[in-house]
Image (tube, helix red, strand yellow):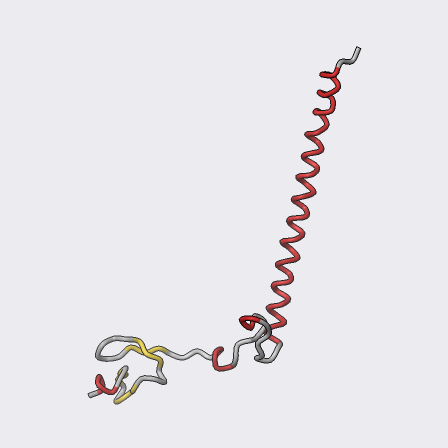
Length: 105
């Protein structure tokens, strides 16, 4: 004779496999979503490099940097105080670099 407790035990024995199956499916879905997100990010980054410098939406997420922003400039130390200043903003006299007119004198 099969009592109620035996029947419940047989139902519970199969739930471990079911829970493992659900976990595996959720893990596969998570990996798939993360992969699609990474590919989308790479795609939009490549797309933004091809577009002209126009902002789109809040914050200009898809705008590429202008040519001026892409250029770098050397930073030179002042001969008097040692502060580093962009080369275009400082003063160079006789091979020495100064951060301002007052330090040049």
